[in-house]
Length: 184
View 1 (tube, rainbow, N blue to C red):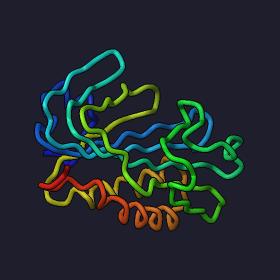
View 2 (spheres, helix red, strand yellow):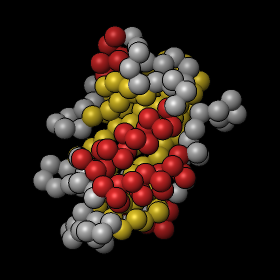
View 3 (cartoon, rainbow, N blue to C red):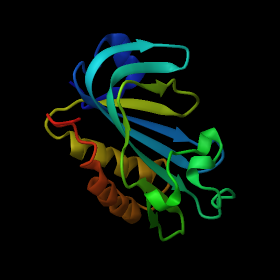
View 4 (spheres, one colour):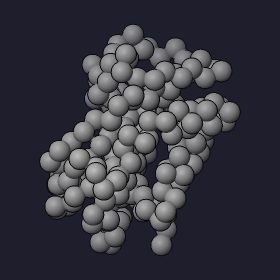
């Protein structure tokens, strides 16, 4: 079995994890390298169904957000929680780790996960945006971190050395969303 696959294809094939798992959604800005990542760990799945908006998981979840903001971004003065929907993550700057790349881009990482207790929705992919489900084959953390490193470098255009360092920062926070028997 693959280590990960596109979420909606996995749903159509009936290959979504039924007890716990991880989903990574990537949202690209049309005209720049501004990129938002949403990592969700989930557990205790009661139901999964599709709606007009996307795929609804009736499950407990923990979300971690990462945002790449290019140097000179015109809305950098606005708190990420108050930006337009396509630029928003649910944090204020004081709640984010801020990594500045050698090109002066900013990569923001949520210090704490956002917890959902009953359900969450993964929006349908539009344009280049995409969501993946990751399968726990023993090395899931390393698989997701390697996905981040490559995506930051190749899609979000973070310099390779900086992408490696940012991935190390994500690793520090990732432990807060890891699915364990005491997930509550």
